[in-house]
Amino acid sequence: MTAGSQKQQRGQTAYLAGLAAESRIAQDYERRGFAVARMRWRGKSGEIDLILRDGEGLIFVEVKHSRSFARAAERVSPAQMRRIYRSAEEYLAGEPAGQLTNVRFDVAMMDGQGMIEIIENAFGHG
Image (cartoon, rainbow, N blue to C red; front, top):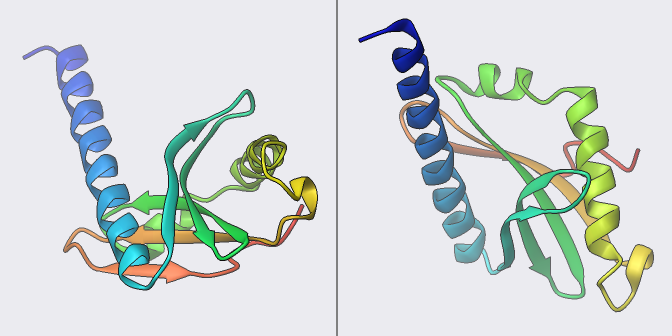
């Protein structure tokens, strides 16, 4: 196997692990009474992993999958937070209350053993 094909295989494995993490985390939110509005929503500014309904409000969720929660948390950069804000603003344009919609930004992490940790209000409005 060449180095390029090994890298491609690792990328595919990471992609599938990310999809599985998003699905498990979506189920966790649903169990707690939140409705999944969108998964992997893509706008001009980027992608939001999960968008959930919380009554009239929305929860924008960035999902991170890594061997440990600490490694997952380290992977949320300031640049990524800015991208999520811009994407959320884009999404809110289609909501009845627009930018006045009550929103929250969570980071949901899944470690290598499949355990889930959710940090609510992980970052405020930028």
